[in-house]
Length: 167
Image 1: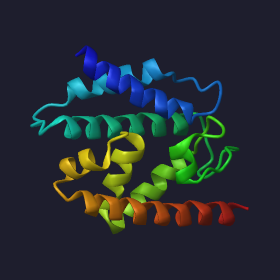
Image 2: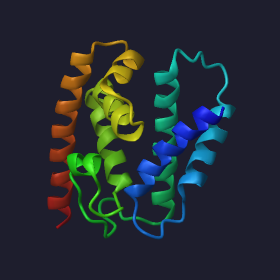
Image 3: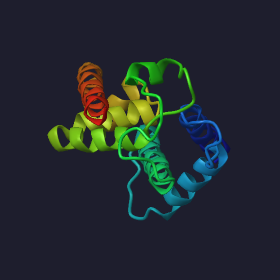
Image 4: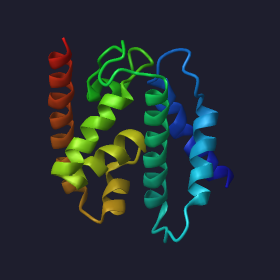
């Protein structure tokens, strides 16, 4: 359990680095909430480590999106600085991200291609490697690499288009 908790804590810290200053949810609270939801999950046959952390990533995404919605964020923007997905993945310039807009875009992507949405969720939110993502999705590393590249381009276009429409 200590190893699992530490890995979840690292994931939560990565998320919170992207959030705005003064966010009411701290990394410890995020990981504790995710952990509580994970232990409530019944009848799940955990396939492997990647499967577990993919589920944790999905739960943390939901928690952050729910917190953003509860804070009364506007549908797209909410005064947050726009970051490309690539910028947010490398090193965030400012600790903020628009999780509501990203969630909306990921839901739209899932309607078109569920696997590409899962790849983004596992890589961006879960911090899984290409290999771990491939293992969790039962596809090749090259398929994940290709899906990752296409999904990032699609999300960039979608999120950029949202900002243009709101202006």
